[in-house]
Length: 141
Ligand SMILES: Nc1ncnc2c1ncn2[C@@H]1O[C@H](COP(=O)(O)OP(=O)(O)O)[C@@H](O)[C@H]1O
Ligand SMILES: [Mg+2]
Image (cartoon, rainbow, N blue to C red; front, side, top):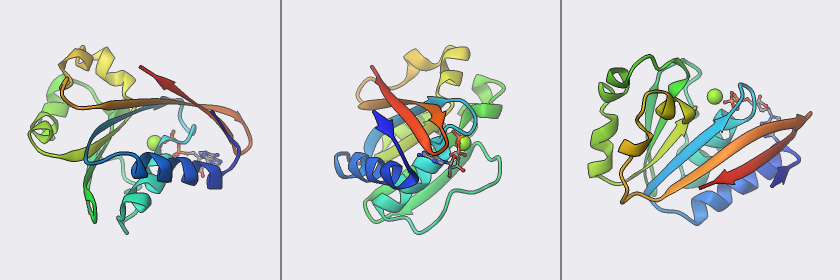
């Protein structure tokens, strides 16, 4: 899918939010600056969080929204499986939430992809910069 503007990205995030509920793993990949965080901001707005995504480099930020909790992970600086475990990541799957993961490819790097809960639906989007304001978002199984 080609996204030609921030407004189109917002519409896409609105659609993902409208068509899902708080039991979803959103795996986001793509280079730095491709739009993963921007998508997450629009997604948070769409589900009713007035907070914006922290500009800090925290691995994990949580948001309570009108429709349920959103947990946002940025794994870019993840150095080990233990680092992820200490955030309480695995315990989240005992509950209900949207779990948004930037740099999901890091899960593969640490051999964690297969450990993701099979009873949680996944949506995997890979962002690619095509030009100024223009992005391609591809869906992977
Ligand atoms: N169509 C678009 N989709 C996503 N981001 C866009 C788009 N057009 C411009 N941008 C800008 O590109 C930047 C993407 O940065 P960011 O979301 O932080 O990337 P990432 O988290 O993938 O490293 C933002 O400044 C965003 O406003
Ligand atoms: Mg980012």
